[in-house]
Length: 100
Image 1: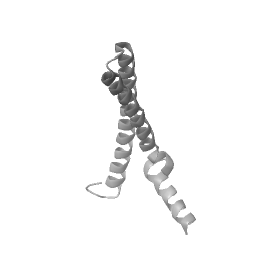
Image 2 (image 1 turned 90 degrees about the horizontal axis):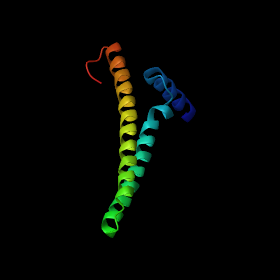
Image 3 (image 1 turned 30 degrees about the vertical axis):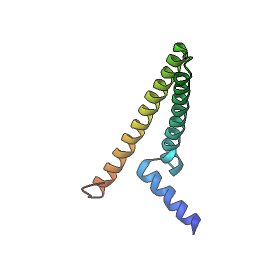
Image 4 (image 1 turned 135 degrees about the horizontal axis):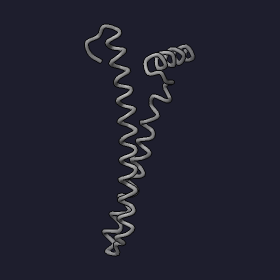
């Protein structure tokens, strides 16, 4: 039964999104990982500020790294969200629905 359910899920995902279920949800994992990186960067910046021995160069580099991660991950997740939303909208309109 589980194999049949997985097969149906896989077929539905491929038909709706053009991708396997694992690929559909992978942006969530990527975003979670990027957020953990940002958490670490901000923790180091906070420790630097609280220590009173702030290296402005280190804070700047950490801030630059955080901005880079945020911009790139934000763009990636936004793109994936837009693609998936469009596919859902197309499926909804193809099936005669008026909302997703």
